[in-house]
Amino acid sequence: MKKILVLLLFLVQTSFAQLYKSEPVTALLGAFDQEVDMVRQSLTNAKTETLNGIAFTTGTLNGRRVVVAETGIGKTNAAMTTAFVLAYFKPERVLFTGIAGGTNPELQPGDLVIADKTAYHDFYYTTFDKRKTHQTRNPITKELNPEYFPGDSVLLKTAVAVAKSQKFESIPQTSRPPSVIVGTVVTGDMFVSSEEKVASLRQEFRADATEMEGAAVAQVCYQQGVPCLVIRSLSDKANSNARTDMLAFVKIAARNSANLVMGIVRALR
Image 1 (cartoon, helix red, strand yellow):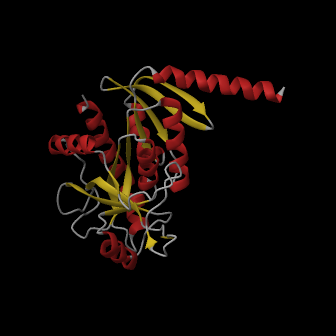
Image 2 (cartoon, one colour):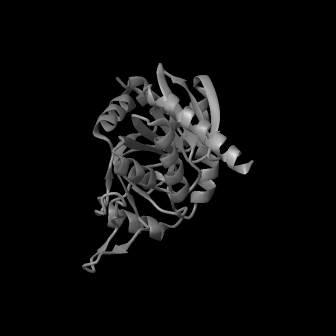
Image 3 (tube, rainbow, N blue to C red):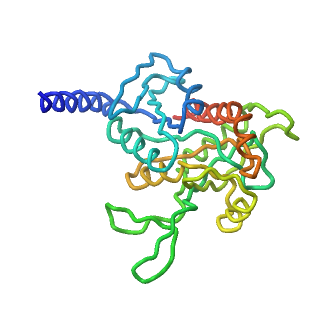
């Protein structure tokens, strides 16, 4: 009986995947509910299916077929959900939306960073020739990946163009309206809330923002040859007040990022 149930589950999942192989789809991912709720609520003809325990919502956004999912927080969860969405839905591209802590001193909560590159700040490896590196290794090619995963150039260009005409919400008590930059986002399995860590990330990586999923999503997409772009809106400055600021500003920051991502989908050709 158990074998029959497993077979049926496999057939259902395979059929569901085959359905989306034939029609172009864009995957929109975020780590937790507040980061993707606005996107999900904007879909027409929305339908949610659970595959491998992950809820995937398909529908139409601005005339384009999309699939939306929460990856969960952290690198492993993000990589797992990204792998599932690539396997089942065969998306043409992946956009990641969400919040981050700012590490560029010129940025403030509410600002957005379009990642032209992402990297791990907590991955260190010694190669066979005893060279220390942040580079991961591609299990398919056996070659080292780049230290910085590049954002897709077409998506990046589209995001920059959309951001120029997009309106974003200001966070109370900030000194100016939100700005958008193209910059470096670094990823690690920690919530950064330390001035010392911010200084270290800025010095070593020239990081503009830090979060917990982006590079993992970018790595999976890079190794599978799928265009990917990470969008982040700052909820805090990753300093000792980060936890308080994040809880206060998460909703506005999440909406700013989601608005830009939905604008990108609208502008796709």
